[in-house]
Length: 133
Image (cartoon, rainbow, N blue to C red; front, side, top):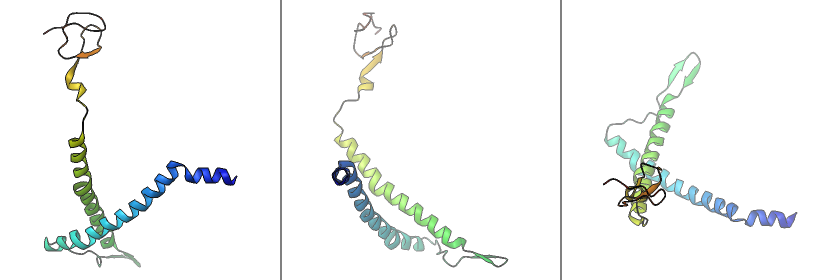
């Protein structure tokens, strides 16, 4: 049983997951600090108020909708920071590093057998029918 547990823990998936969680937590701290310390103060310059003290009293209950609004604004700022500073640059990098050819633009479908053939083919390699143009 100990050997099975050791094999389970040392499997690549478990170690990859553990590393991912640790890196994710560290990255989360960076993004949270960026939003709280850089982007949120910039909102004050744009006239967006701090809603922390905004409450609504209904009967004896105090509904703190301001905290919800602050959490919503924080979520949108985190999402924007991730999108503009991580996703977009990584997509650009992946597109620049792309080495395979765009096969879909280099092929056409044969009108007789509907097989995918090279765009410049004069005859279909599958059914031997002559190709237009």
